[in-house]
Amino acid sequence: AQSVTQLDSQVPVFEEAPVELRCNYSSSVSVYLFWYVQYPNQGLQLLLKYLSGSTLVESINGFEAEFNKSQTSFHLRKPSVHISDTAEYFCAVLRMDSNYQLIWGAGTKLIIKP
Amino acid sequence: DAGVTQSPTHLIKTRGQHVTLRCSPISGHKSVSWYQQVLGQGPQFIFQYYEKEERGRGNFPDRFSARQFPNYSSELNVNALLLGDSALYLCASSTGTGVMNTEAFFGQGTRLTVV
Image (cartoon, rainbow over all chains, first blue to last red; front, side, top):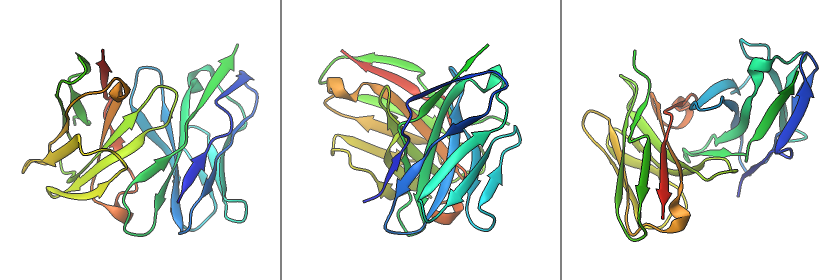
């Protein structure tokens, strides 16, 4: 069985401070990894993804995530957060075999304090 | 270009009733997936359809069914509604399945409340 664990349900952080949102997964097969973001009253949007190649992937708005196979982690980081980053962030995995379903973490609410 | 559209946006039903939720994918996308998101949890996979065929099914009872039409739009049907079916139902479209399904575009969801 596979699972995705986001240990923190909420992460409060001051504006312009760095942040890390943690994601760990377990899977018996290789996986693709994703971070999705859900802004208030909006649908889920893809933030970044790891398919292959460089283990460090970046988004256009300054977030980055690093795939660590030995620790089965895909933590999301940003060096300096902005009030507009307030949202819920979901980590998800997709199995590389014929199973097509995304498996999701429970989400982490990023709360930016002014 | 329109994104993924879902209807209705909100719905209130009584226990035991039936409900149909609708989804129109992005133009050119042939795959539609359905997810259930209970408050405080991540989405749970229900179904995936590609080219009108079921390609994946999550751990949901037979009360849940879906279909995809020739224009790639999709319906999710839930029979004999239970209070526990109250959730946000999300539809996602993508160009394909499996390794091609690496970016799913989500609608804003249908908020179903069962009373």
